[in-house]
Length: 317
Length: 284
Image (cartoon, rainbow over all chains, first blue to last red; front, side):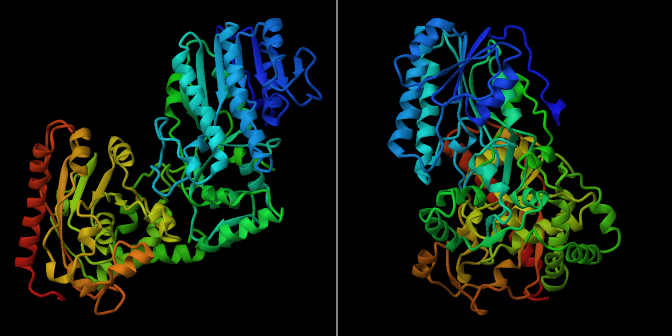
């Protein structure tokens, strides 16, 4: 498994890359992949224990005025913006301010300090799992996830802000990546946590196709997005899609099927009682399709995931 | 549903092979679905599951509805194609019978992708069953993708208006929606008209409890002689017409599009008339 992360190399790799949210699990994995290829500057309000020696880390909230100092000092050529808060237990207003205001501020600074490339990490979940979804959603699909799951609105707003930023500032190559469900040994997001459950709840009689991508593949995709000339919105797919039941079987899980008429009520009670970290809206993800068409990133960036489907599934444990 | 144990699945497959007649297994083995290591194609179609799931439908096909086929050779053996059929019988057994026909009676068999209503994915079990059998939600995006991949799709342009019509209006086609014609013009796919005779009599709807249907969010709540729309053993006759080819722009104005749609509707209508004239009895 260790040989999988051959570095991404291409001519014109930015010489200095600022990474927000670098102390998160994904950020740390990205730092590990990227710091041998280029200078990485980290920006996160959390500390970065065990950071590589050649990496400069600034422990700062991205909304703070002092962030400009980081731009002045390091003059980054590119930004990779991972500083997005997902915790459903976090206070809504704080998460909203951090995600939306933070993104505004950091992209603004990119323009003022001549950054040439901005890569924003969004998610394929912005489309939302819906019964009437097409089997493969292209990038033009309306971002409807907020209709049923209001916690997604931050991410949608951020994605749309990044899009309008992309059009307003053609001098800055903006790339918005919408990867499918990220799983991996260090990732602690909802899909990974769900797949780690010994007895996960499923919705009786529903078995949607699901797409997953290994965290290291997401890091490689983020690095690939730095390639000069690439701009736009891209779905990022992993090694394929398969029924949810096949993933659970591969992991040897023992699902508890709950009728769809009961599952949300039960989960709401459990969430309110803090028995589970899954808000009831997450049920949509194990009931309906949210599968995307990743062909644009393949075509325009030459994207190839390195981890096989089976290894990606097994990576959660 | 997907947890059908291996033994049950093997038995069902054997039953399908038996009902299909000699050589069925060899013919079905010719189907090459682009499955991954988990046995499904990107849409969730599972050939192995489908062959097993076909068994009870094949029994209906052979023993219950005793389907008679006319002109199945007119369905192209390969390449993109749109099958356009009338829709009737309260429950969509007509779709199942057309699909079984192309699986069991065509050599090499053709896997049909029937387009299902957008509310089907909200139904437990049904949604999974449909997906594993290769049926997909009929969004234009899905149809374009399938036709571009040279697949065969089955369209009921009457939709549930045709499926749930009352018995006194049997074999009177509801106006065809134009969506399939746009797709055909865009993709250059030929259209094969299909007329299904017999499905109207399987579940004659005497009345439709509209308020109850609304309450349950069903398209209709028909009351039939069997109370629930369980089908009677009427004999099916499925007629396939000559492929029709249309040229033009998918964006042409409605009048021109309507004319072409009307041509297809007339072709289906002619197949129905012929089928009704040739039929000797509803049940045998």
